[in-house]
Length: 96
Image (cartoon, rainbow, N blue to C red; front, side, top):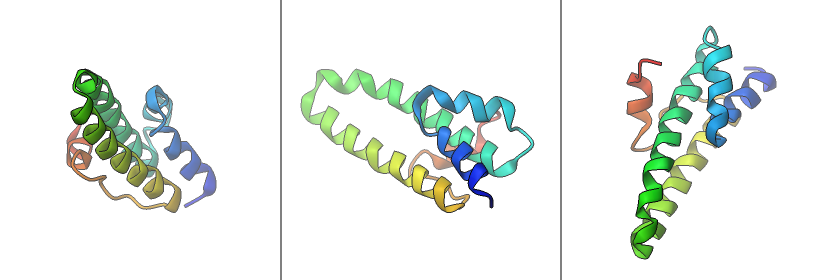
């Protein structure tokens, strides 16, 4: 796995930037895999903004999101193609 592919896969976990690898690297299985997971994480982040009205819930959801996000970033940088916790299976099945 080249460092270029790993860095492009990393873009998938940086908010809306998942659109770049998702649209332009469909033939690369590794990058596309991480782009789909990044898309699911982006949708999750948007949904979690509604928890901001309940401070304790926002802290718990925010911490859980941070762990999931960090796992995805680490997987992309180390060249692993493993699902992130909780939402990873959704990303694998997403028809993107």
